[in-house]
Length: 167
Image 1 (cartoon, rainbow, N blue to C red):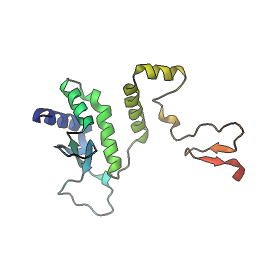
Image 2 (tube, rainbow, N blue to C red):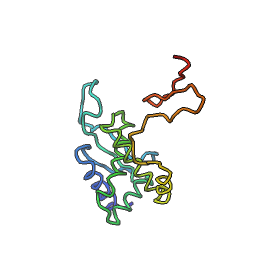
Image 3 (cartoon, rainbow, N blue to C red):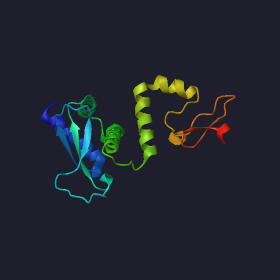
């Protein structure tokens, strides 16, 4: 990726993320992650301060295939709105890895479902919708499916299954 592409994708990522990050910097790391959140060097915080309470810098691995793909889409003239779902998802995944909590886990799930749906293609999405399967509704997240016939196992709201014979 040349310097112009690198600068452009970093600017697009910063535009999408806004105040969620202090800056977006390119890195040519050979690590497995497309990006990481790092604490700014000059920021000192009390030990009990959670990482999510201040803006971190995002370091983008421009050699990673996901970032290269985003850069190609950016060079093709796609808008920030078009690239927002994958960029926000990368940020949220990096936040989780950095030990932060997500502000809106349901929105994260919805975004991931949209990305998966578009990746699987409209034919798969159409096939699922004809069977009554919703890929974009996280309202059922964490709820176990109904128990098998003849089973004493009951679903709980946390998605765990409890044996009703133990009650």
